[in-house]
Amino acid sequence: MNQHEPRLTDKIVQHIKELIQKQKLEAGMRLPAERQLASELGCSRSILREAIQKLVGEGILSSRPGGGTYLCYEKQSWSEQRLVQPLKTLLEEDPCYRLDIIEARHTIEASTAWYAALRSTSEDKEKLIACFDATLKFKERDDPALAAQADVRFHLAIAEASHNLVLLQTMRGFFDLLQSSVQHSRQHMYTTPEIFAQLTEQHHELLQAILAADPERARCAAQRHLGFVHSTHKTQQEDQARKVRLTRLPDDTHAATREKKS
Image 1 (spheres, rainbow, N blue to C red):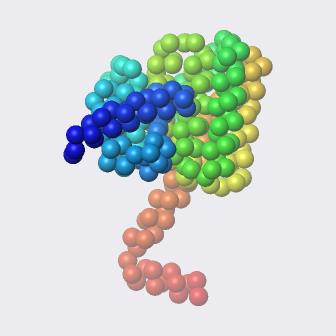
Image 2: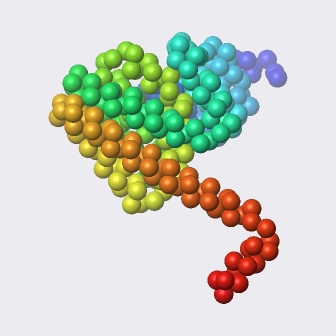
Image 3: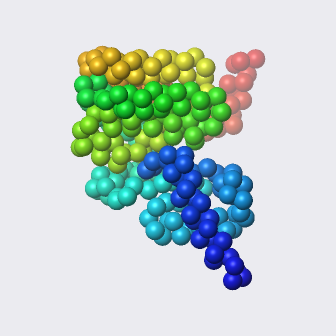
């Protein structure tokens, strides 16, 4: 490394901070991919990595190997430390725990939707509309990671509009788990036009209920939406498991199956 590189790294660090402010990124949101970010900042990827590591050291960013770079919360919440981390471990060991995550969302988000309908301000409503519009925009871009992020932001915006600190902190603690859950759902559900249309309609109904200040309608909309996600995801998971089991059949069984078909 030459003597000019440290200064360049510090300059890129500042540019990243400005980018975060300009794009109004919030805690838990993902930065652009490394190649795109290096191009936007006009630097090499090696210098970008050094800058990111500095920001990771400052607690501003968190970097996940193969998983991107994210904006951190100012302080790691109790729920992230004591509740979410063990669940992350379980999810890594057994993906079937995704269904448990969806069930947890079902309970929590029925409450956040109820209180958001009661308490959301005009600013909250503007943000909810913008977040809903973003879910449509990212779908058009066909980027599953960004689409999942936009989806989670919509649901998290509802929690913010509830003005209930406990519910909001719980949702923030679940952010990574929710993103994993939603992204997995998108990869298996949102690529089907008919299913995506239903999910979009459900999001729209949830939004309209909150905008109309109708808490019971909002609660029911949240429950219907997550009930649909749960049942659809469970069906697809069972179908996938069935396909995997079929691949484990002995060769002679496969032959017999082919003979019956012929």
